[in-house]
Structure formats: C-alpha cells, structure tokens
Length: 554
Image 1 (cartoon, rainbow, N blue to C red):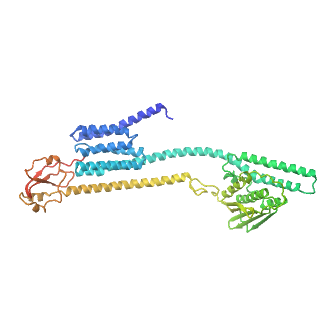
Image 2: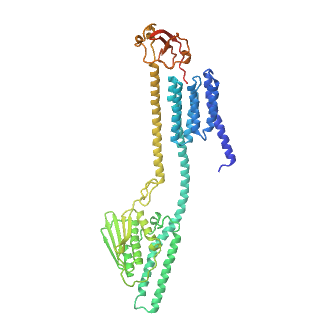
Image 3: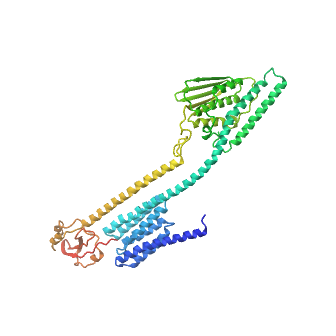
C-alpha cells in the first residue's frame, strides 16, 4: 500500500511531466507562429490553442478520449481561420492519441472517438467551403495523427502488460515450487497408506475369514470357539484401527484415492511383487473358491504394469471376500498384442448361513470407495482403463493395461493437454497471446496501407480539383471581348475555380457583369495567377489577370 508521502510524490511527478509535455507542445506552436510572421489574430492562432492544450494534457490521465477531442478541436481551428497555424498542433494531437492507446484498452470507444473527430472536421470543411488543401488536410493529415500514434500506444500497452504478466508468472512459479515441496511429503504419506491398504488390509481380511470359518467347525470345544471369537474380534479391531490410521495418513493427499502420480512410480518393491498364482493359492487355503486362467503368451511386462495387475487381482479378491462371502471368484488374465486384460468376477453369494461379516479393510468400498478409487488412479497413471460394476448378481472388475509404459505416460507436461483433453492454463494463455499478436500485426500492416490509399485518394482528388479548372495561358490570349459564351466553350476548362481567395474576389469588376474564375496552372506549391472572365449576358465583357497568392497550408 502506498503511503501518503508516496502518493504526494507520485502526484507531483505527474504534474511535472504534464507541465514539461505542455511546454514542449507549446514551444512548437510558438515557433511556428513566429515563422509565419506572426500574422493574424494571436488569440485564435496562439493563445486559445495553448489554453486548450493546458487543459487537455493533464486531463489525458483520467479522460484520454476527451483530451484527444480537444486536441482535434485545436487542429480544426486552422480550418476556421486560414491564418491560424494549425499544422504544428498535429504533434499535440499525435502525442495525446498515443497516450490514449497506452492508457485505455477500449478499442470500440477509441474508434468511435476517431469517427466523431473526422465527422466534425469534415462538417466544418463543408460549412466553411474551404479549399482543396484544407480538404486534403482534413482527409489525410488529421486521420494519420489520430490512427497511427494510437496503434503505437496500443503496442506499448500490450508490451507493458506482457512484461507485467511475466513477473506475475515468475512469482506464481515460485509459489508453486514451494507448494510442490510441501506436496512431496504428502505424497510419501499417501504411498504408505496405499501399501497398507493393498497389503496389510488384504492379509487381515484373510485372517478374519479363517477365524470365522474355524469358529463354525463342529469339532471344536466351546472354549475353542470362544477363543476364536476373541481372535476374530481382535482382528476386526485391528482392521478398524488400520482404517483410522490410513485416514490420518491420507489427510491432505492429492485425491480421494490418495494415489497420485508419484505413488506407484516411487514404490521400491515394484519389481519384487509375488506372482498372482501365489496370491490365489493363499486365498484358496482360506476356503474361497477361486478359478485362475491365463490366455496368450505374456510378453516382457513392465514392473509397474505387473504390480498394477497384481493390485487389481488383490483388491478384487478383498472386495469379494468382504461383500460376497462364500461366492466363487473367476480370474482371467489375457495377453493380447501389446496389452494385458485382467478380469475378476465374483458370483452372487450363496444362500444359507454365512460367517459373520468381516470389517472392511482400510480404504474398501464402505469407507468411501477409496480402494477402487485408488486402483482406478493406479491404472490411469500407466495409461490403462478400469471398469468396475455389478454383473449377473455379482461384481466384475475389468482392467486393460499396456505391457510397457512410456517415460511421459504417467503425467502431463505443462503446456500439453492433460487427461481430461483440455489444455493447461499456460497453453491457453500462450494461444491467446499469439492470436492477439497476429491481430495486432495485421492491424499494423493494414492501417498504414489504408492510410496510404487514403493519401493517394486525397492527392488524386486535390490534383483533379486543381487541374480541372486550369485555363491555359495560350487559350486565355485567344479570348476576345464581345465573343459569345458558346464560342468560348471549346477553350474553357470543364469547371470553374471555386476556391478563390476573398481578397481576389473583392477586386472591382465591370458593373452589371457576372464573373467566372480560372487558375493559370495546376501547381499546388507555386504561385498561380487567377484568370477572371466577366460576362454581360451571354457575351464576354472583360477578361483580367489577377495576381494570385500561394495556396497556404493550414
């Protein structure tokens, strides 16, 4: 938060910069006024423009659009009074338009402002009946001072935003790095929880199942049954404590299953997992009917894939023992091509008496589906798919696994699509920045091209205005007073000179005549005499050569 002293210092600095900018723009105007010989009204040519700029320059900080409109009004003064030095203030208009592009991001409002300024300038040209040079000034020079600096200001604004965004991105990356370090500890706790769920929970479930089966044996004495009941109760309590422990360890993990991308990959026992056949043999010794079949030739499986297949079978058997006691379990492992399919299905539990329910192992379905959720995460991380759903009164788990896992398969790199198919935030921002850059580049090329065409059109119009009203000196010499107007038509140009200076029009003409004016040459820069032809009715009464004055630029 900025202190009052800092705010005061910032306000003072802004005022100094505004004063310096106004002084520079005013200096241009004063110099041009003196170069023109200080002719004309100093109020209209110098004082009024400087007062308007004194308001527009500081006002551009909060109202840049209004400042541009005021600067355009200063330039329009040259249309109202040809003596006023309006051209030097095009620099002020260009500077304030540049500041508009830097300080405002509203493109539509800026274009509307430019259209309004152009409409005001053109309407003023029509009302005042100005000459071709002033039309050229209104159609070419003022639009150029409005559009080109504004595009440069927009580029400057975009560049500043890019630099500012880069620093914000750097700060975000630093915060993310600290967050990743914190998550490393949570992932280790999650890995321990996953191992406890997959291994210890399974073993405890088998012990409880064996104790329940022995408790129903008719050859045991009452004391033996009581001891077995105490044993099964102790195992049940141990399973409950295990579930509570895993809940604490998994607190703050990355997902509901607690198996993030670092869990399976960081497992140090990935290459020492026991074969599925040994797992099935131990389950059969507990009294569970399990049918295991393999189909196809197993290729060189990745240790991570082999361990995942083991976990699929282990989790499925644990769920079957827990939720369908006495049901038969069928396991099919099919190796086909470069993929392995693991299908574990249990039938509906048989009717009749069954052992007392065994408490679910840590992370099983009744504790929030964490077992299957974690298993689903394991399978997804190696590029496989997992489907688990009821089937024919029982339950089926189907996992399809690749035989080999690529080095980039488990995760997604920044800037590439993730597992949901959507691009990351940085990729979206990069794409948006590229689109914006292409648009700005196209505008930067199209705007000068459009203004160039506007210049050419304005210059062509001005040249047509000046050449279509030129009466050649030789033809003027052939004209004789008393000739009919129809006889002179073949020597006269197509149109009359409409922009005769007032001082020339004020020269006395023969009484009772109507005069037409023509230029002696079509040059814009050189001095051009004006030919005056005065008619009495339909006959030429007099012809005069009036000294013209150079067409002054506004």
